[in-house]
Length: 514
Figure 1 (tube, one colour):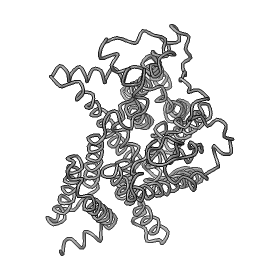
Figure 2 (cartoon, one colour):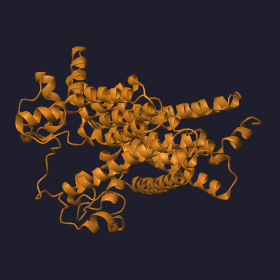
Figure 3 (cartoon, rainbow, N blue to C red):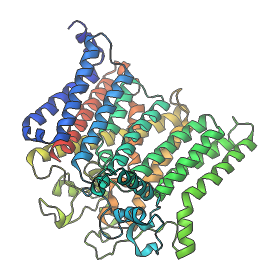
Figure 4 (cartoon, helix red, strand yellow):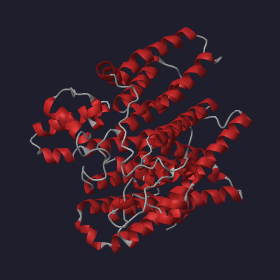
């Protein structure tokens, strides 16, 4: 006990996090004892208990939990969270554009059965406008499994192992990015926890379309771009070319970060720190030669063969029930009345299983926030306890979003005023992140207006902004645990409390209720 109490005092935020998580989850599992009949949920419960006992063992043996150990434990919980989710969720449940004629499932099976590119006009085949890299990878994984004697039905379920890997890798790359920007200790734990427990990445861990791999590669590109900016090496820029190229080769929108990358290139080229401009020009030329063919070969092929524009996306009919184009611009951007009329779940007219909604969600900011934590679904909708946690999840997410946006503004003002934020990164690198963020959000809003249907507001199109938001939050909190100012104390406790509620409610919904 003499060793435990000083540890709790020194690491009060982590201790608070663990205690709240333990109390909430044990209450949840105690309330639904019948759920222990489901192996995946029992597996997560055992994993959670293992993490608690591991932490307790370190404390008792006078081996304090350092930053890396805590991050590792959170990663373990995040991985178990994702693993439990895919065990509970079929490859046909909570999917995007997977089923139906010419959906992602059929696209994958075309490669599996025929081992060649679809030889049809992609305008007549729904999801075939998407580059085929992801579908080829999935088909190859199916072939490997079937050759080992695994039944095709089981092999299809196992495709979620690829998405599990990608979602888990997003945690690791996010961690590396946060470290690159000098985020440490409590601030790093806070930022990393957002990624580990955010429902968007949980849903994507079981979604067998091409979103999660493109997102992973785009995030790797952001990391490599900052690395290259600090030390412009040929090897780094070639890796950057591959990551951006394959991100676009999986899904064209993976190239949205290229605007920010181009700005970094320009700053380096026209800056004063690099004397050998010819070396940079050679690097840029090599980047283009490697990146462009990988990124755009599918679009070039379809343009040559079928005259299809590079940015072609199939459009739902205006007679479709999801059409919301009749809503005014003010309603799409500033009318938040849906939150008070329909609650925290995204309204889907008569498609809800549990309750009748009179219209589809139409406000873009509200739609983005709702789908960021629930997707287009109704996790826990049919139970009182589920709705309770859904409300906690939504409003805690809202608070974290507001704080992260305030943090972004604070960082920009500080950068403009002082020309520097800290020793770990330059103002140009912060502007790079901001440019990527703005381009992604602007593209999303433009997409929502051009394709005015409910489904286009799904947050998965801008999932990268979760990482950026966590980065701003981490930079805002960096070093504040050392300050004794009242504002910093209140901010610390507020963020920690909100994050605990966010993580607990996310786990409660997607492991037990959902």
